[in-house]
Image 1 (tube, helix red, strand yellow):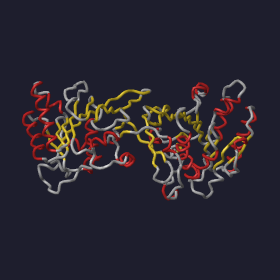
Image 2 (cartoon, helix red, strand yellow; image 1 turned 90 degrees about the vertical axis):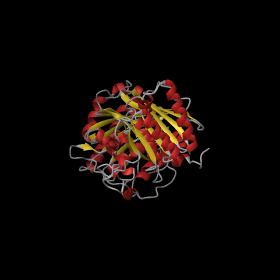
Image 3 (cartoon, one colour; image 1 turned 30 degrees about the vertical axis):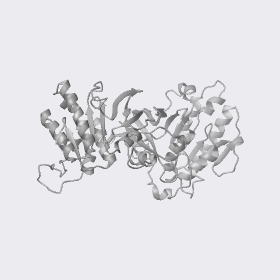
Image 4 (cartoon, helix red, strand yellow; image 1 turned 180 degrees about the horizontal axis):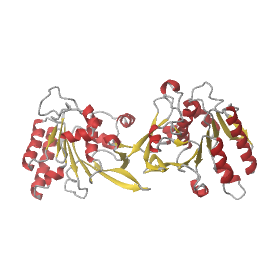
Amino acid sequence: MLKRSINKQQIEKSIHIPYELMQFVQRNTYSLLIKGYAGTGKTTLSLSILRALKIKSNFFYISTRVSPKQLFLYYPWLGKFIEQSKTSGSDETSEQGYNLSSFEDARLDEPESLFERITNQLMDVKAPIIIIDSWDAIASFMDKEARLNNERVLQTWRERAGAKLIFISEDPKDTTLDFLVDGIVELGQKFYDNIRIREVFLSKLRGVRINKPSYIYTLNNGIFRSYNAYQPTEFMITCKPRISFKKKEKKIPPLSEDLYIASGYQGLDIALGGGFPKKGVVLIEIDSHINTRVTMTFLARIISNFVLTCNPILFQLFDGFDPSIVITYLESYLPAASKNRLIKIFCPADKVEVSSDYIIPYQNCNDFEKRFEFFRDIVLKTRQENPEKLLLNIMNIDMYQNVHKDGQINKMEIIPFIRENTDLSLLVIQHPQNILKHLSGVYDTHLRLTIINGTLFLQSLLPWNHLFAIVTDRSSGYPKIKLESVV
């Protein structure tokens, strides 16, 4: 049993390791085995556990592979997290002033002396957590019988001392410790669409119910960060913002010096080489299992970046989008002043239930020429009214495919027109299997909102780049998306 009750939402907000693992490591005493091949992030996870538990000084870290000074070099955040020594010139202090007393350089130690040092730590109760990185380097010098005996001794002393013992193993196939330890976590990696995905498997956590046996994680910035399952309710607007958007958010000029248009997501702009290309066409592909609220939350950040810098937006409503929901999201993200004149939403007349300054109704007909003519007139009028501004066009190109006589999009009319008369066009596709083949070669950027292992991600297909995890922030009273690099 845990010493105190654990609030799941508080844990998920404060730490970045799987919820079940956090429940496990908060116990008073346990033994945990972290397995994985080289480069999977075992050391990063062990250090991130210290960070999650906020243990800054009272621990013992035994390194048989790299020196403690190298650890601080590879993990820059560690120097700020670990308490600095007040005594300069000590053998236990690095050149940067980091306290190295809790780190043991065991690269040249004999197994016997090292094992004795571990048992002394347990008997003297000097450290609540002892991390052995890695146990393989010690165990390889023992015969099978001696190894089993020593591992039993460690488990016994660990339990008597009320300590926590973390073993790190480089060989996932080695099962010698499996039956002795209380918990087993295995780190691995696979490829998804030529992108490397890191996955942590919770094989065994005694006393903890494992609801989700695997999580995708990243090692970005030298910190282990796992991601929870996609929850559509996280993207719902449940109350009005508590803080003015203008005070909370910094205005980002959409147009950069090298003629890229900022998306409002800094990490995405860097991955795209500067942002969306001016006069470009961006294809945003939406997985069929993703709620429309996710799409609106993602687009709202881009829209707000344009409106806050007084640039107009034309928004063609997508199939399945309720006009009132779209307006609710826009009003949550934008200041009240002057937003109505900058955003215009194209909506079929039969779906307009309440009058709004945002809405431009149109007759839902099956005549391609009439629908395109209506769209063209609005674009040209908006451009004429805002000659010095950037014009953002968000459209559902599915509807042009559905009304065209041969079932295909007339690229010769639509794409050249939007390139010439808008500064950026976002084509949102909800049924890509029916339309992608007709758009081949017409877009400059291809993004995909997708679900992998139950978790929501943004994938850049053109230009190709790593995944971005989609993380929600509801501190302002409405959902905001943060993109985190998955590397």
